[in-house]
Image (cartoon, rainbow, N blue to C red; front, side, top):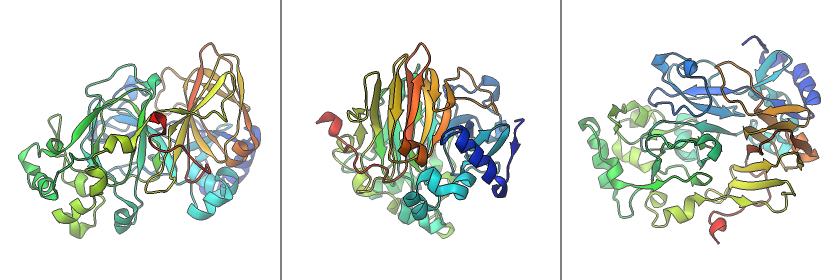
Length: 414
């Protein structure tokens, strides 16, 4: 990077200039995250020479995080891993620091006063094959290690899924009738090779243009479609599968977010699971999502679709939409809250900023596909124009309680 990085105490003036220049829309730079235990799926447009930009020992880069103020919980991580940067006239500063500087303007007074941060993030997750059957801790269990829980969601954008890769199926939950004793036996057999946890689950075929809602405490082994994942701002997890495609999963990845005194307490580890949700006899009915057109906010030439919606235990924690603007059309976007935006097809502009979908990105390169739409800009309305030959398609996600109401899981089938 040739741009200079501003410290937290020096972002004020540059942030003010960036907000003025972008009419409340801020340019973000790509945020790349490696995972030592995964194999990159090679569809998120990172240049092939840069898949191991952090070093082979860190693993390949198979995630790009969007509008993130959440640190990646990777062993051996660099200081700013997982954190998004705003860029303006050769200077960069953390979105996290910008929110701390002007939280009300960026995310709204209500959200900032409650959370003191942008409490959500999203990512592209792009893996060649399946990953271990795992869960994310609830808020209650994550609090035991000074962290927050992590509900999440999936959407499989067609633009990022030209190939299926090795296993486009995801195991979710546990087969109804499964007992805790059976899961305990899998943990007891951890060092014997394949511990058999997938024998207790069922796989669902992944379908482009659809998604899922995944509450905390629910086991899931994501398959190999590239996934857009709006989620809570946390990186806690526990792997329950000991062997994946012949690769060992260390016990440390099962207990990394478990209190140290409980690292070998199998009953405690199992109690982190939301048992009723895992053995739900109507798991797909209660968690599967298909897009729903927002008729009120769509116009001729522009279609706004809900892609992530519904609540988790009655709470609206995050949501997401896909906006498609036809060639030559303009659209005034108005949302009741801030959002993180990524362009997945076409070119155009949002307010005063250019939008361009890249074909290849080098590690450290700044792009024109990602922005943060502040609360002020979203509330006032921001004009978006398709200036290219293809439809302009974007994904944007929102924080908690942004909308007065959302569609419910299952509404697309009703």
